[in-house]
Image (cartoon, rainbow, N blue to C red; front, top):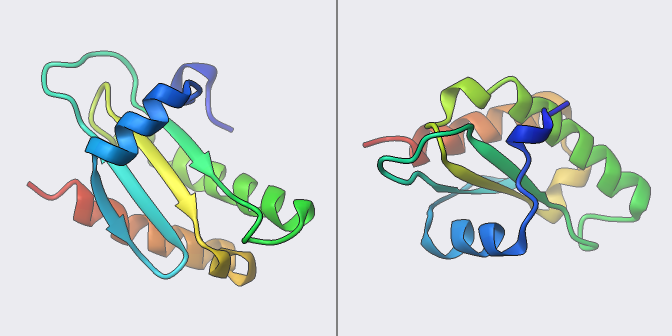
Length: 113
């Protein structure tokens, strides 16, 4: 579970991360990371799992798995960064390990200098 201080909640923050952040796409997820220079505070993460993924049960399962994956990777994110994880429709059939591998691949690409 993500601590409350690490959750992205405001739509302005989501919009800013998606429009201005670096983007990396994989088979089941797309990551948008906006690392702001000189920003302090905790890294914040938000999730987008839309109806194309499946019914409510599938969407909630994907959301829970992505939250668990990102909770273990918070220390890898720059301080004060905004991260949006968008689940693609193929994420409904993906296992936890596949989600974690795609998130790791996208993170390594986005956080590369």
